[in-house]
Amino acid sequence: METPDNWTTISSEAHFADDHLSVVTERVRTPHRAEAHAWTIVRRKSAVVVAAMTAKGNFVLIRQERIPIRKAIWEMPAGQVDQLCDFGSFRDVALRELREETGYELAPDGETIFLGDFFSSPGFTDEREFLFLARPVQRTLQHHTDHDAEMILDCREFSPAQIIAMIADDTIRDANTLSTWARLIAKGIIQLQPR
Image 1 (cartoon, helix red, strand yellow):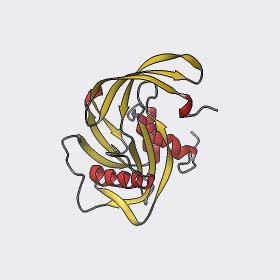
Image 2: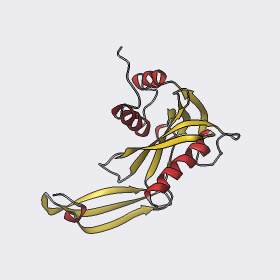
Image 3: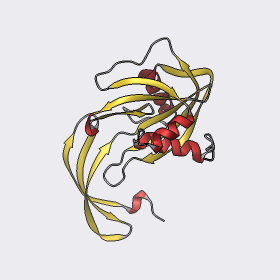
């Protein structure tokens, strides 16, 4: 059986670190290779993604400028988890990000459902995303909080049919939103209509 204990780190050399990530080169012996293999890894904090569903069945998306790709794209609210915490705290972070980025919050009779997690790009980073559905959500009295790190241009509700069209025409292209949408479909929360 393959467990983290079967992977042996022989050496680790740090190249860069800041508040959000670190870059290291590690030599690792795997369960399937007797000789150590060198790999450069970007270590990133875990993050949460929240699919915010209104009482009418629409989903709240934000349009955010993303400097690395030089584009503004529509995506589900998300954010890094600032410190190691227990699983219940991930839910709290998801709901906080929802409020800060969209100006929506979980309705008093609402529920939060854990949809699972995924690794964003395991070929170079250990970043792990935790996915949540919050339903129903409602507008708060205040809009999203402006932070220097947040580059949010717009926030709107979209129907499932609109989101499917946005995925089909490459308007929605980020891994967080695509993975969360796939989980919503796989778990039967969103029903696809035959074309």
